[in-house]
Amino acid sequence: MKIWVDADACPVVIKEILFRAAERTQTPTILVANHAMRIPPSKFISRVQVSSGFDVADDEIVKRVEKGDLVITGDIPLASEVIDNGGQALNPRGELYTPENIRSLLNVRDFMDTMRSSGVEMSGGPPPLSQTDRQNFANNLDRILAQKRRVSVSEQLIGLGEQAFSVAVYVAKAPPMPYFETLQSVEPVINEQINTINQHCGNGWRKVFNVYAKVLFALPSEHYSFAKQAASWQAYRDTFLLQKNSKTALLFSVPIINGTNKNQLHIIAGRTHAKNLLQQGKLNAQFNWLDDEFAIDTTNNIIVCPYFDYRQLSNIKIARLSELVAKLKTAN
Image (cartoon, rainbow, N blue to C red; front, side, top):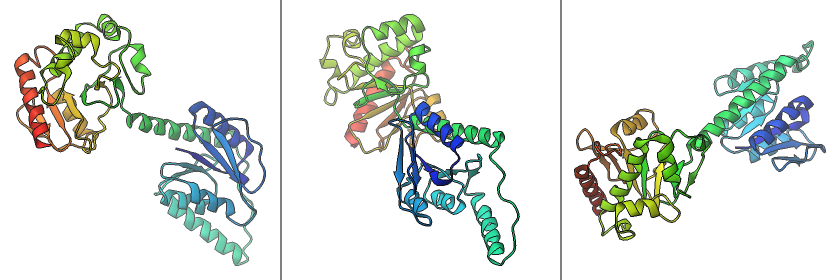
């Protein structure tokens, strides 16, 4: 996301709010105007100077704006074009232009223009920018930027292991530790990290890692080589699981699955987690529910199985999971 500023008519105080927001959120902010401008030194703030002329700056913004970008402008026709192109537009007084209100605002503007061109004198102009206007602008800007950050994070995989995985297991929640509160990517396990999680988070997470290693060891050997890398699943867990070059991942984020990479296996741990993802519209899958615990989507290489716990995913059920993986491989 970028912020584009119709800078010729943008009040200085609004520019200052934008400059602070650009630095704070690391959002590229570009001021477009037909005159030279001073901007603070920042890798997130830049300017574009266009030639003088009617709507030249507006046309430049329309040409450059992309879907999801935000434009700061009080020009209603420009705001309308931005919305038509999939962007957002915010007035320096804090009013957000939307598909619902932009047509009526255009109609009012056109009516006023018609009245002026007919010789009717229109007294007064817009009032000076008030403190309330400034606060409204800052509040709406913060809300838009926060929403964009949430969308950005939701479109990223978050967890332990490798982004370029061959096997990923999805669980509903991350371990309750400060490290995971700020994690925004997939990072390999290092320096006894699994043991640290087990010590801080208890037996439940110890079972998750143990069952994960047991599942990898049970996968069909003609398709996966995990069991060939160590003498036992315990040794594999301690030496390879979720580490760099392991081709494994334990993910706490929403699955990002497009079905095009047939070399990636997606395992959703727990029927409840899978159904919640479906109900919330966060997972696009066509599951064939085999029973109350197992489901399979051969198009997207997804299997739903019981949660990674000794009782829920017993050795017998791990063997069944392995059979389903073999079925996926045969189908693809």
